[in-house]
Each structure stands twice: as structure tokens, then as C-alpha cells.
Length: 388
Image 1: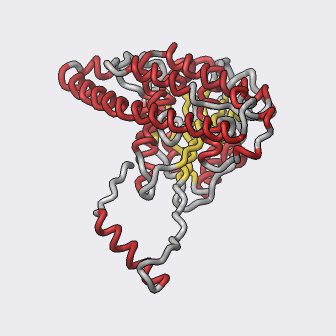
Image 2: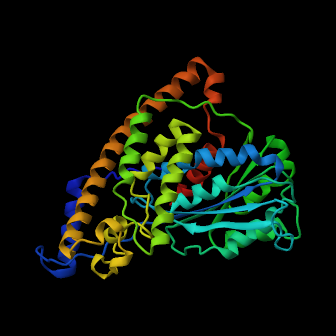
Image 3: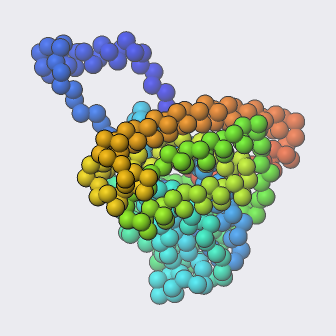
């Protein structure tokens, strides 16, 4: 899944110079070919929220930042990918029966605080688990990319027969496969039972992976000497975010970010540390509400934003002062992010060594420290991205 660019710097320079010469006839040409855009990874997570799935939902809440954090270390086609995640729930009595007990919770988005917020708001209730229906709904409803280098994945997790409902799972899986979407199935229970109830077959039909997990696994976190500092730096980074838009939008965005920090910290200090690492990566995007991200990626121009839609601290400033303040917050965030990235690398190394030690010396403790849902998703993504 992770690729390493094996071309030397010299080779890259030689190729670049030759290409420039062939196109322009001179090695001093100023024009460059436009850089190819980074591939996009789209993940749709479909969770069974019937009564028996409390453990699964808890794993999804606490392991989200582990899952998405893997992409900060991953390259597709030699580039850090763009990341979008969607969330569906199914199999819950509180959902609309005429819609197959299926609900789109969040459409594909790069604002992963929305996904975290939605996961923490999910409730379980008894119901009918219609896997074919939720797969077909996600396939038809989401704005899937068409890029040949992009990765499109559906992950469906549950513990009842894959065959339930009036939408044939074979038709649903074929519809996804026809659009280049892989389907990986995560059965919460015995492996053979999942095979017998067609979870494995569903994955095979759409070139995905079939995995089994213990939905009720109680993880024992591996704590590190770096967790507390990472959580503190995460809070410090929040002060560089400048919410723009009308007042209600600004307040909602800022409170959502703070609430997801709190949710992560309440889960465990290591979850807060993992979230901090993701926030410092290039994948934590908030251009829809944060002025630093929005101006940096060209979503908006500072001078075109009405004064009343600027962050309150910037509204009394002159145009020059606003530009200077934005530049200061941008530089401050980059500095904090660099610290977090360095410390996160130390943390990852500590965790890897501790996992290896536990595997060798205390297999039961190593099993307790596992993250079944995150591990299953990461394994499936690695398999799906093998040809990218």
C-alpha cells in the first residue's frame, strides 16, 4: 500500500530537463507542464446499528483516527491522496421502513470532524439488516469519482445474513463493481458463519476483502510518553483556526472541532494523540469554514470576504492588518504541525516496538491491544490499493 519513490534526485532532474528540451527546444524554458492532481481515496462506511452492534459502533468511534491516520503515511501514484469519507447506518428500527431501514448520515466529505461527530451521535436499536439495500443506496447516492487512479471503497460491517431484504446483494455488489467500487465486508462473528451467510461472497463479487472481527472487543490502549504532549499541541493548534462565514456557521464549526477533541480525549489519551497526528497532516482539511485552509488552497480570497463574515478578531482590522494576521496564523500552524509530526513519528515507533514486544512476550496482552475494526479496514484498503 505504501510506495517509495526509487528515482534519485539526479534522475528526476535529467528526465525533467530532457522533457523540457523536447517540448520547448531549450533547457531554459520557463513554462512547466501542469502537475497531475493527487489521487482521491473515497471510503463509504456502512454500519449496522441494530441492538447487538454497540461494540462495533464504539470501535468505529474510537478507531476513526487510526484508520484515516494511515493515509498520512501512504502514497498513491507517488502522491499523498485526497481523502473523503461517507457514513451510512442500517438495520435500526428508528429508521424509515419504506427506505429499507437505511440512512445516509454524512455524504462524502473531507471534513472528518463531521464523521467523528456523527459516529458519536449514533444510537443502536433492533431492526432488519438489509445489506443489499444499503450497498445499492450508497452506490447510487454518493458522488463517486471517475478518476482512473482514484480508489473507491465501500466497507460494510454487521452480523446478520447478507441476504436479507428485497434488494439482491448480488445485484447491489455488481452495480458497485461496475462503477469501480470495491466492497469489503466485515462480519462481526465467526469466520465460517460469515461465509455461510454470504458475507464472503459479497466481497468477492466486488473485488473486496472479507474480514471477521469481534465486535465486542475491549481494547487495552498502548499508552506512550508522547500522548499528553500531542493532545496539548492539538489544543494549541486549534487557536490558529479562523472560522469564516455568518456567525452561526462560525460558532458551529469551532464548537464541532473542540467537541471532537473532547470526544477523542474522553475515549482515551492515545485516541487524542492519534487525532492530533491526523490534524497535523495534509489530510485534515477545513476549507469550508477555516480561513487559513481556504485561502491556502484557493477556495476563497481574503479581500473578497465581507467584513461581517470574517472571524471576529479580524473584523476591526485594516486590509493590510488582516493579511498580516492571516499570514501569522498560517505560519504558527505550520510550526505546531511540524512539532506534532515529529512527536507522532516518535510515538508510532514506540507503539510499533511495544506491539512487537507484547507479541513475543505476552500474546494475550497483544491481542487485547489490537484494534479489530481499524485493522480490518486498513487490511482491506491495502488489498484494494495494490494495483494503484
